[in-house]
Amino acid sequence: MLLPPLLALAAAWSYGQAQVILKQREVSITRGHKTTASMDCIAEGIPDFQYANIHWYRQVAAKAPERILYIGPSAVSYDDNAYRNKYSSSKKGTNVCTLTIKDINSNDVGSYYCAYWHSVTGYYNKVFGSGTKLIVSDKRSSPPKNSEILQTKHKNQIMYVCFIEKFYPEVITVTWTEDEKEVTDNAVKGDAWQATKEEEYSIASWLTVPAESEDKKYYCKYEHEGKSTSLPTQEDSVKTSQDEDCRTVFSRDQLMHRTAYLVYIILLLKSSMYNIILFFIFRMWAYTKHRGKKA
Image (cartoon, rainbow, N blue to C red; front, side, top):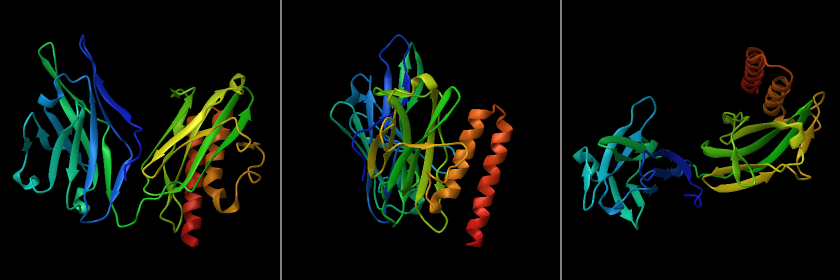
């Protein structure tokens, strides 16, 4: 099931003409075998959209993108006749192009991108969307079961860490905002991890701000296939961590993963030695993995 319209900006091209932008949902679509999936591409800045050629590409792991088809003013053209019974495309309204995939199986796993050849002063430039990932699984998607913000302060800096836990599949978008404006400076998204003996995933993202910004309200926003939520930093539920002791913040079953992130935070605030940070992160990860195997 697709989420409500939280769309990601993919690519744009502008050179003395209207800007061309293709938008796709970057979250995943999870489908079981033998079902159907559809994904939209929203185009902005394309004149005479109904007469434009919109291309669709599929990319699988470790391979270059492969074009499936393109749809013109009146018909769909396929790069391989074998695709005719598998894929279809249509246009809706003045700027929406849809790709439909039928009779899904494991070979359909991958990311799907829309594209448009944009002519600028006699030259053509291809604009791509951000892509939508298709996951084929008999396990149903599930939204995060828990999310919270940890705050830690050191000298003239504050770091907020947003924990989002126990969701499936692993595809998720996480952004930080202030007054509806996205904050990208000093914002880092970690990799999703999978808990031992569990199929759900968890992830953390952190934002570093000057201490004088303590009274400002920032939001950690995440979008998952089954849920979209915004967490504010200025709430009683935000937990404050002290460098000396993290056990008062974390529950025991989550301590190992979260301690790894806390070690990262403390080192990042106290030191600029990047190699030392990587060393401690790796040691904590290796220890957690070893304990998981023994369990």
